Length: 114
Length: 119
Image 1 (tube, helix red, strand yellow):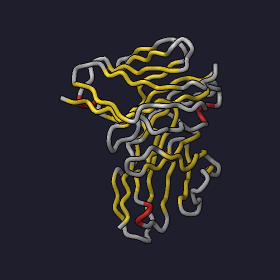
Image 2 (cartoon, rainbow over the protein chains, first blue to last red):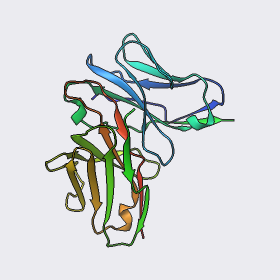
Image 3 (cartoon, each protein chain N blue to C red):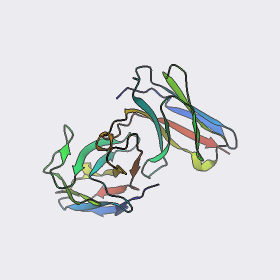
């Protein structure tokens, strides 16, 4: 799976949009971009994933550049409960991908400030 | 989304004793589950892959005789930390994917984690 690079930490004011970047310049054509987050002392939580089109769900939006070498996770109205470590993971999606684990990097520690 | 339940959420044990951690997929079947360990201020590190009905696959550096994994059913995997020592104190997390044969790009679901403290 391709390697990802994320800033180690970011701050965001409560109520503002949080934009978390991720570089994955070695991504290949069959690799998806996944985002998870981990709130302190909890297991990771799935947020969103995409291949090349922008995606949106009730939690966040995922913007993937046209060359797919980078992406941005957007939390439109950050709250204090969004304070967490956010992980960007790139992985191949195959029929056997259910049998392969997620590999976590260091992620971005997002602090939402009142 | 699918639910993975992990128990206990917190355990304190004496050095030299063994501790069992359970990981259950509550509303789906998981032929494969994964066990991670996380030390303070570090990322999750994969320990082993648990396969239903067969032996687990351990990552390099993880002692299979110390971290016993049993995956006896499609909804339960257990991790037993044997002869625990203070350096085994960590946050242990299990994961499973609601994997239906032939589906691709499915997301993984994680248990809430188990905080093990060995004193």
